[in-house]
Length: 94
Ligand SMILES: [Zn+2]
Image (tube, rainbow, N blue to C red; front, side):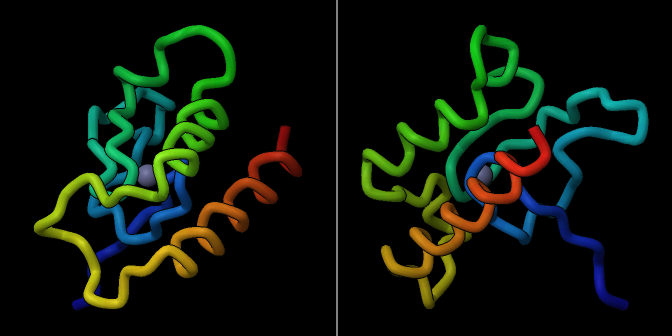
């Protein structure tokens, strides 16, 4: 059986094993293995943390947070496209 995966609203990584927020909108404190964003912790700061955190991550050159989960096909171009996609999605919904 295929497990559900979830998309990180910060970097667009689509293989999160747990949703960032549960059905009640409560953060699950899952840490994105891609950008390292911790839901319920990093998003409690002021401003628009998703886009800010994303920009910082982009500026650093898309570092993959959890090296153990880093995909074999990881490269900057894939990460850039992933980040652009989620950026578009989140700006449309705001
Ligand atoms: Zn992420």
